[in-house]
Image (cartoon, rainbow, N blue to C red; front, side, top):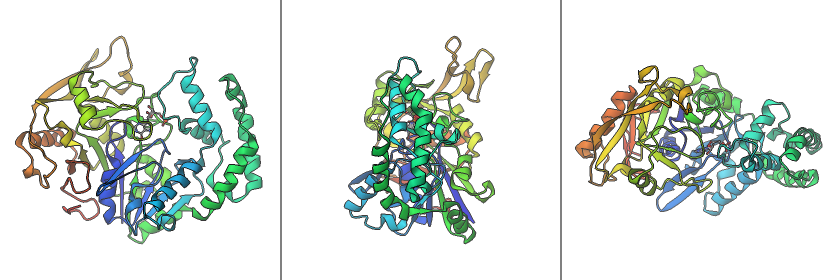
Length: 437
Ligand code: IMP
């Protein structure tokens, strides 16, 4: 049995695309279990840079089965465009390798409309969403007016479901000053999408469970990151799905006891897109260095990401709520050239100094927890060529070891550049020993 969950340990954009892509060389099946096209996983292969929003990052590996699990919300137009884009680039077998859960929920035009109107409205608290309709689609799921992908098989039934959903949304759309969308336009567009998507539909819970029982290697790929999780993130500045490792069982339809290893990904620093607390945020030349050198601009929205130092209490929190067995550290190369590197190791709060993340106090404007930093030495040498830890400059090695010791999670991988090969692989969760990417 070998099922590995890969989960972002921060606020998303930890470099999941590259890490999943590296390990999927060893995986038979890759499953996305939560979120929707709010994600943007960047894959760099040779000189080609591809951003996937819905498709699992394993999609570029020939022979890998890719699954969109029922924990996801899927915008049919985005999915079809993404498939066509890859086919145009020569990845012609994408549809043969892809299975879409017939229980995933559809993102429909009114979800995007409500998301966008709310973000623009002075009456609601904008949280800087990606405006891809994620929140309203999950709201529909929870209030039992959602439309599932399986309903694309029966267009008459689909019509009734969408009529009911439009009735439910009408007061909200009108209160936000929006025009009611046209039912017939939605149905025409869905009828076209159905011809492409119905052949991809399947019972993905049986597929994934069956693969695990046959001892195939299964990778369960998260999106968005722990601190954006609906239950465990910095609520209400979160996304609307279960991004944490526990979400992998629900979102893919397997029992939690089927999962062997949970691997968390953290950048060597921190970023966040959108509103919400970010205690180690930098608003100075160091912050600009991280944004510029790390190319920290949203891959879906193009928005500049907020940047800051690594937050170890947050990483320990992620280790707890996900049950991290292993850690992948990404973007270490971005720190090259900084004369010194600060790391948050604790917080000063009205209760005293704490080493856990005081997550529910982070937006206390009167007494915000104050990060306590430790300062480590920087390095100037380029590190993209490092393939084992000993290739790194001494200060970089010390930094990596410090993170491992402080988080108490064994390090499995260090990414030293954007390309697939620019990686130090220490352990592989599928084979248990070092294997070059
Ligand atoms: P939503 O998921 O579009 O509803 O956005 C909710 C919050 O999650 C916003 O702060 C977004 O910026 C953030 N968010 C959603 N998806 C991602 C992601 O893939 N990376 C980073 N932030 C994200």
